[in-house]
Length: 341
Image (cartoon, rainbow, N blue to C red; front, side, top):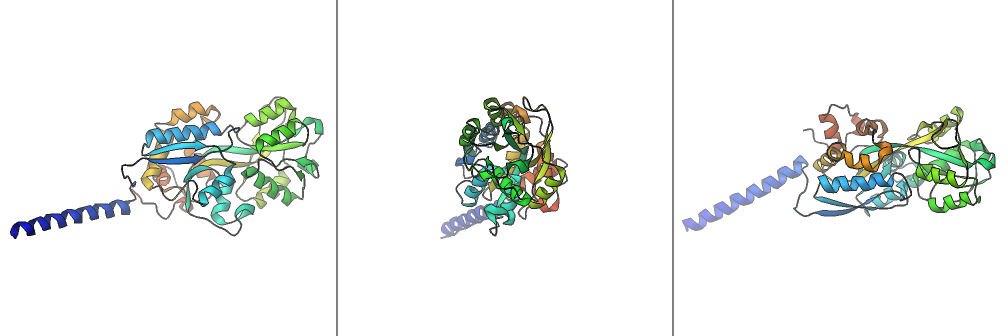
């Protein structure tokens, strides 16, 4: 009888320890490591985009340095499409864009009006992406107002650029004859002179813009200050930047453009430890991987760019990494689940 009671005591004690350990890990936000590798698909951008190699390289960085995750990168229809898929639970991690993140979180803009969604976090922003409005030089178009009534592609269907262009042009009373199509079809239509111009978001020099320019001499439209002020009021998450003279062959003037920031978003299934390890891998051990794959952005200051671009809460692990490394993180970017270490 004494031996039986002793065995029961040992079993109860072991059970209590296991429960206590599980509770402690959950409360501390530690990674839920079941010892099983998780295979995830990361939604990227169109494969024709100069950003695609970056996202592929980040999938490799995470798979290599956070090996409990194995990332496969897939082409997507753009950042609006990515955000819809993440909201629907089709993907857990995806490329994103700052204005789409803001509109999804707040339930504003054409795509998400009245449907706020706050169950996502931004891991980081890695690139400033001007929305470049290019037109054929043979059209004689010099101003965005000259696009009124003309056949024009506002950006690939489902892309953030297309949403922004529609909103911006509506605010200015400009109504082109929109040619809605994917980027590849838009490039063909531009080369064949079916449309006067098209739109591409990306860091300059962008390979898509370069190809369009090679097929048909292009110009990039400069947005006047008074028009930019109206656009920024209509699209509060937007900023502005300049594509400098000489960025593309034959374009010899600065062009002020609407600008967004490209980033990586994830759903709420990732722990603070997950986010911390991913950010650290991106900025430290795996930095050379994405710098080699994406040389145009190899000197980008990702920590500072993340703080400058974010308009929604960051992933808790990102906040932890930034705080540990001396960055001042605004209160509005710190999520409720963040646990100070």
